[in-house]
Image (tube, rainbow, N blue to C red; front, side):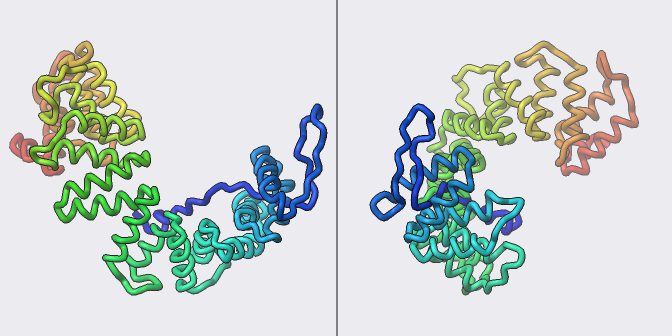
Length: 374
């Protein structure tokens, strides 16, 4: 994936504010209470500014945040920057945003350091050397801001503004993961997967999964199903695939569905099947998430009556979807279509040319069974 896309800004939608006088009670039935935004009432001002922000009364909130920032309240400085950069999108005031983020960072507000680094790196019309970007991400990371650690890791991976270092890349991603940046957990988990240390890979993918990151849940499932040897756990394989499926991971939906359909050996043979639920899962993967391999499973279920009545028309449609409509094509679906057109059935006539076409396509996808039919 493009590293620029990976640097998701992760802006904290902090709500900010400030003015010298304000009214806490907006309810007509309440008696207005005038308070000052001085040092003794900063928290009350922040609370009121945040409420105004939630009501989308941005100018009023901005007024409060601005005065609080003038009194060195770092959260408010960040909020001023955020409103000018991200809320007033149609008419942003980037100079104020940059100044506010800079002051927030000087006051050790980590989100401000991060956002200023992102601005220096990506905003149009902002031309700052990469060394400044690195310095800001470094400070953000030192202040335990996860996104800064993650972005800084990319600089070390690419040698951009710093000396390239795979060790620092891994170290910073580990830190970002412990600070609850799931993408960092993904990087570290995949690193240990590549070294063959499956227990460490599982550890970090589990951390990512606990942060509701679909890929890490799917990888956690894979570890329990395939990679832990005698410590494999089929129940956990199913559990984590279901979790990833609920996060819209098509491969995980298919894996969980195949367990319930009995289409895989990665299951407890003593556990009961639930073919109807399994079919629903592989259909979801095929139709909602366009995972082509799942279309072949769903087609097989309709062909054989697993969890449903036999429906050769729908089976044919699903094989065709898996082979012809989705990318990458599913070789199994192509192979089955080759046999359908070779043998014919109650709804499909024999068609030797189509049969040869689908066997050839199966072969071209690297499946030797298709080549053997030619």
